[in-house]
Length: 380
Length: 139
Image 1 (cartoon, rainbow over the protein chains, first blue to last red):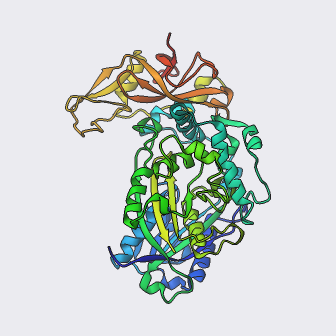
Image 2: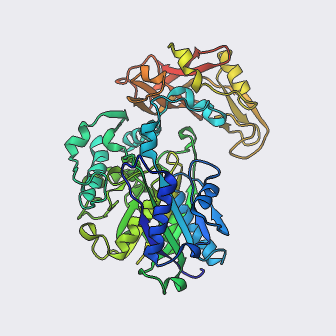
Image 3: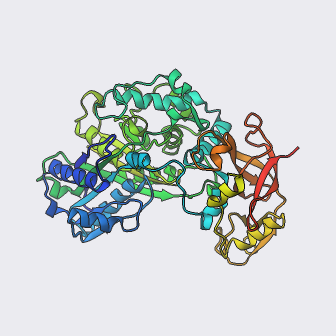
């Protein structure tokens, strides 16, 4: 074990619908705010951790921000990248490869989608994609395949899936920054939303927003002089299983089991010790699979667990306390926002939605098509 | 636009690893890869075995019979030709040889398809280069 590493600054950029902004602007806004939150300056940043759609992402970003970082990581594992970055940043900081790590993200995915014409041609499928592309398997359809199999194996119901979205909306009603603030969702209404890819309805699918965020990490020693109460990284691990759904060896064996076990081991705790859970919820089924893989539920028990209201405010396992991707924000890749909300909770700074006595938070980012997971355990 | 023309944008760019597979479907054969070192099958086809990394692999004709491992009924897709096929079924089919592939289930309504349903391959001629394997219920 090396020197302890802490989250010392977090911030979100503006979010929602931002048709006049660029993604780079949102990166900058979030990074500046996170540094101010920490009490650090631009010139303190020597480690840059970010990814996007393009191989030149880190180069474009460093140039735009006027940074000349001496340590860069642009690993792209989809939405799990940000939890993966925490592990990489911890290693780099402990090894002295950098002193202040900036994890930053920005996206205008909502506005980009509205600018794009419906049915714009995708590039012709090459390599492994050629065996899947001719069949019209949509992104949501991929998650629907996982949901259908879970229903078949364990009797999971549409109602249980909807309960995940209802819990997220209940949290969002406590968060004025949430996209669905002021727009509660009942179970009955969730089940009436239109079918997108059976068994997933609109209410099972995340929002599409614009937005960005940033997280600053440094050593515990450096953190002593900074503005905020440092939040310790107690464990961080990631794992990858497949890209195409046809290559997923056994659907319920979700790779969060591997990343979660290792992150919890590093932290020296078990799932029972977690006070606040922040999990990537691009689709309701992701939450159920994650609960089981991380050991919060037995195999096949997550649907019934969600249906009891366990995830909602006042429930046994406060989950996605900002409203999550289903009801707060979802700008393309959401992994970074899990870390931000967990930090707010562990600082005790969440106002109406504060989980009482939150000491330990677990964040589980998921990327690709249930392909990659990164788990981070944080402690107050 | 007819289906074949609209599907063109979604059709494979045939490469060195995939050419024998698409030659196979043109001849109404469903070819998968078999590893002579570890004796396991795999699909999609790679030059070397993803299980043991041996490159002592060969093409074998699959039975074309399998079962639905999971499926979804797509109700929303803006892209042609899929937009005009809604609702349609996409499934993971597990072949008798143990490998899974993505396909449509055709000649089948959404009410009938289910996990575990026996299916068999049929071949859809799309272009001179590409014949797509599709699956239909098997009685």
